[in-house]
Image (cartoon, rainbow, N blue to C red):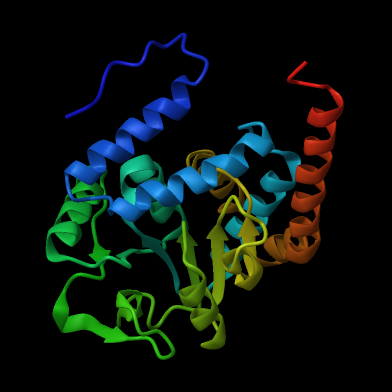
Length: 259
């Protein structure tokens, strides 16, 4: 049951609606309780970005889409927060990239798997990996539930898109020789530092923008994609993210916003 109605002229309308979606998702067993904490932590960094997508993040998203298009067996990992906040967009991205969806959870319970599967199916997903016990195996180096992956998906993939990721799995996947693409508003998190491509942006903006880039880049051949990819460097873009946040904080401080 949703909370009090948020008026559309409220200055924090989008943020409050997002929070309400997550709370409702928790009541529906889609979102883990810890997912609310994770969202709040990320939202703090989004304030620093100004709650818009900076130029460097658009370039990160371009690099991510190109990397996924150039992969042989790309997979998109989905957790509860992603399912609640951008199910239609993630399904659309999956279809354009020809990258199957796989449910992968830290707090793994049957009722959550079923709930997330239902959300993705209603959003148009045709095939969803990660819940059929006949196809599940474990990733080395991980002791928690995220070690469980699908033999048809993450286990065999060469590139995994893991929006809203935790650091240990990102590092374990890299150690297995896989490319990892992550969305994390904290450019200093273990996830951001471990990923092959790190996107410093709000997940709801990032996925929508990636869908648009995917429509454009999917029309290119491999040579054209390689040429586009040469324009971007993940480490440089992460440095730009830190510089942007630092300069924005200095700018806000000099504007004496509390005076």
